[in-house]
Image 1 (cartoon, rainbow, N blue to C red):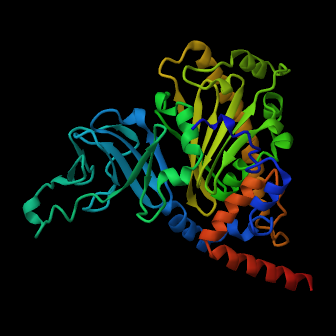
Image 2: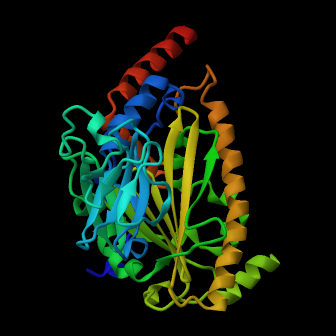
Image 3: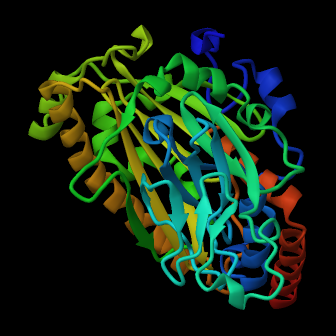
Length: 409
């Protein structure tokens, strides 16, 4: 499947007003109530009903090329390790020792023939079976099968490795919808994870509820106001893309007019497609959003992937990875570094915005906002999914509406 024929406005699955009207969510186009971003009960439901049931990105296939190679991730409260076994198979399993619950492996890397817990040296085969327990004779009736590491579902699409701990969840391919073929078309599997001075991943914590950050990424309504760099570099009005209920992709052309900013102008002069990148990215960049909080920035010369993980009612951890071509040249490297510098500024602008929102949703006078049916369509769809999965939101909306009615009477 070649996604290039899907020339649709990312704000709606088709370009006709009739289709836009029929495809809009059935609920009123109002945002979640402010209390939904501060309620601790809802937060616990989000962890169990959203993140522990989702397909979560664990890593890229290039990190798992040989036996013993592993990557770690968190699926809600469950630490997970994906490891390539001696038989060549990839497996996703719990990264928690069955003895005293220490996590076994951290980050990414290559272990030896077994996985060894750093607490009491319980060791596990690469298929999750217990290999040895020191002073084993002191454990009455130790059943090795009962202390094997639990295994979870694993899927690989476009070179990206996902895991899911919910046996009832839809398949990865079904959830990705049009994004799966899009990732294949982009040749993501032919890239590799860039390892910087700090390793293959870097993390940053933000003092905002995870939904505030996700809401911000899901729309470009704020771009003309908040991000002058993006206004000068890309033409948001020419965005095309496709989506299903859970994921979406989009592509937006770069502007041809040279920017007045020296860094941006240098970046414009360096843009070129890396080998394997489709011709449509000769002068364009793209975005991918995968439910619930995996996001890609797709450039002609590299791909940035970042994932949001709730770490508290008002704390979110963002993990970032970068994919580059195995033979990345000096020009592409310089373009990537420049874009990194520009994105630091853009992220700073987003942090300022989301910090203001986190403060504002606590205001007693605020209930919810009216959403733009076109430019905030993805936010509407994202929040509709949350409403469907989390009945607690309806309870909060009813309570907030009732309190506002009493206050205004």
